[in-house]
Image: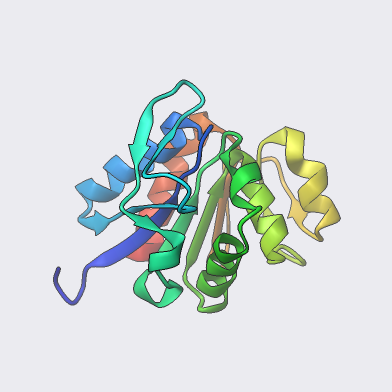
Length: 172
């Protein structure tokens, strides 16, 4: 890996949204951005809502925020499981506090709430959890992609092109 190469963690857990994990990973790879899958440590492979496997590269136990330039929090129902792991939540807080990219799509907003990083921030998410983001102090907007400094958020799989373009833009 060259000195200028970037590395972005993609969080995975059972019931992840398949497009929101794999599309960013493939687009990042096209741009020479390393994107390892990081899991909770309960398994080596997690299944999407449809059962599609994602084999982790590392457990959260084996990584630290200092090693990454950002994190992607995909949706599906995985974020509701991920938020139960204090080390996952702390990892997101640390990435955020270091001013690095925190990118969340769909139900990934649940982890932003748990990390306590939304107060006074502009963000979006899947409409079903917008009340959670608002209650956490977020200025919710219904847009394809919302960028507020190092925070990048989108609503749903149809927003993946704009979401991923913004991630790549901030990293390059």
